[in-house]
Amino acid sequence: MAFFEVIHVADQQEAAIIVQEKLEKDLQADTLHVLGLATGSTMIPIYKRLAESSLDFSEVTAFNLDEYIGLEPTNINSYAYFMQEHLFGHKPFKETNIPNGKALDLEAECARYENQLNEHPLDIQFLGVGENGHIAFNEPGTSFDSVTHVANLTDSTLGVNSQYFGDKEEIPNTAFTMGIASIMKAKKIILLAFGEKKRPAIEALLGDTITKEWPITILKKHPHVTIITDIK
Ligand code: GLP
Picture: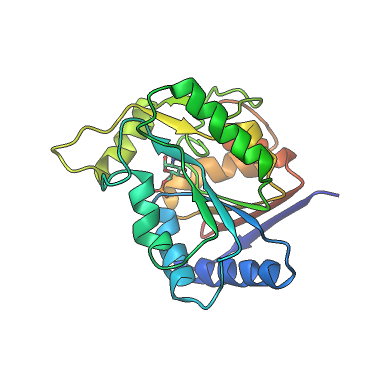
């Protein structure tokens, strides 16, 4: 029987407490060796809580979902920088992995990342969701069989995410992203979604249809999903 749990919370702080407890349990049970991480504003209070906690990730290998193509890890808009600022700079991990935004051979970088993932099966993968239902950077229409690839970002995603970019810098319109099949291989998925803008995506996930037009709906086929949300 598949495990599909929806946990309603009042706010992101309550969500962060639940996440911390779940990770603590798996660390104690020695079942958390590889952790898939996400970026975005959804994750900031979660990482703050983890950074301030006594949880020990020094034996955990981390993999991030995605990275903008063309950005150096020192660029404040890169996901590598985001992770350093919000989590890795505060908590040591055994190893951290993020696609290399400056890789010259894009296909080779996708293959390298997917190989790394295959060698380190994800125990838990965190996910946020885009307003259009994207997970990582798997935009509507992406094949459910996709592995790590170069994604062309939609106007919706560029519009939403560009608010985080200073006006001097243009948001890249391509990114490396784990594919939907790469994400679905994780043993457990924890999806976080807060605020009314995410309601259509969560309603699609809780509805009856699985469709490529709402990539998030594929999670209905995953054997172990926890959704933590303030959307009722
Ligand atoms: C980006 C990331 C996604 C993330 C989404 C939501 O597009 N690639 O992994 O889920 O943003 O971001 P936010 O948490 O800021 O709403």
